Amino acid sequence: MSEEARADALEKASVDASVEGLKALLILNGGACIALLAFLSATMGKEHTIAKEAAFVTGATSALIFFSIGAGLAVVTCVFAYLANQAYSSHLRWRSEYPRHWTYGTIWTRAGLITTASSLVLFFYGVYTVWSHAG
Image (cartoon, rainbow, N blue to C red; front, side):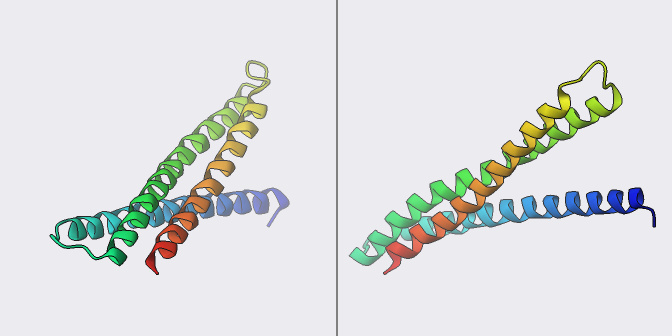
């Protein structure tokens, strides 16, 4: 296998891994939202709520915000990935017409990395928020 073919294979593998990672973030945060909404609807339907449940509901409601933002950031990351790939592609195809597009692609890539990390941090913070109100 030539070096160029190996580089192409590694690049494809990294793109595939990032796509799967974004799917996982969306499933984690989105699934947490769905689970909390189901829990909150069941809990809010009761007539009597004990103090411990009330504290947990408060934590779950706060965590729902973090999970929702995390899910949204996973989608925003996909938009950044699209913009980065378009910028890189434009630069490679029409270098003279788009000389700065490689730089733009790098900026979009970094923005995507930031939103990916933020989505993961928000998931863990949401989990911590629920856990801290559970006990």
